[in-house]
Amino acid sequence: MSSNLPSTNISLNVVPARTGIAWVKSGIKTFFKQPLALGGLFFMFMALISLVSQLPFIGAAMALVVLPAATVGLMAATETAVSGKFPMPAVLFTAFRAGAKKTQAILTLGTLYAVGFLIVLGVSALFDGGQFANFYLGARGSEAMTKEIIATSEFQMATWAAMALYLPLSLMFWHAPALVHWHDVSPIKALFFSFVACVKNFTAMVVFFFMWLAVFSLGGLILTLVAASTGSESAVAFIMLPAALLMAAMFFTSIYFTFKDSFITTNSDLEYLKK
Image (cartoon, rainbow, N blue to C red; front, side, top):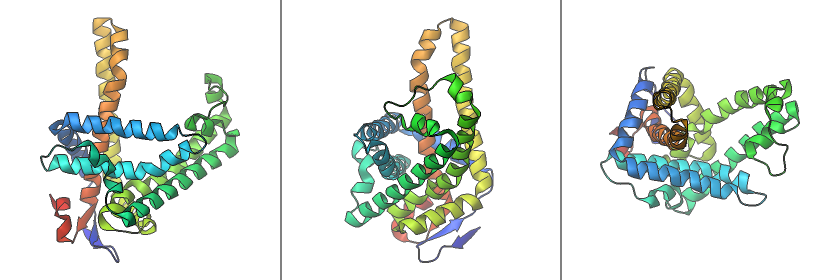
């Protein structure tokens, strides 16, 4: 089922719930086509966001601003891997190599994301005086986080408030970077179309996230069993972080397929979306 989106070259495609499973499988399968490249690009992605976040005063906000552009880079790397090619490091900066107009649009989208995210944290601060926000942003000089602080009702309320507000924000930005970059949709329209697509395909998105939860849980269980059988907890702890990052890289690889199946292009110049 599809419906045309006004003033664009794409149509919204509504998929069954089982497509969420296919998205996970496609992400894992594609990752193992080019594990070195896609794994390395994800580490570069994490390093870039981390490096930008270290800038004085504006680091945390700037990291949020560049996040949509970096996400486009990972999606472009996935598209390259799907075509059987080796994605080079430069693909991570795809969003900044498509001309001034598209660069401005993706940075505008990133700015909207930063504003929205900071509003979410601002609302959460109303419940606990900003402890959750400071903890999330890693603010220097903030009060050290302890189990006692986390257990307080104020911190718990702030956490739930942030989660409730972040859900619609994440739905708006889920497909928006790809819509802005590949389809020249304006940032505001992209947010609307992304939200509509996620709502229309909500059951598939729920299956997608629960499948990934199962994958991460299975990975943790395997590592726990290895630790129990070998008695080497230090060895398991040593590989825990790289294993988690590799699974996260597979997750980001699968994002491309959620976009690919949620929209159908009507422009022959974008035939890769029909592959």
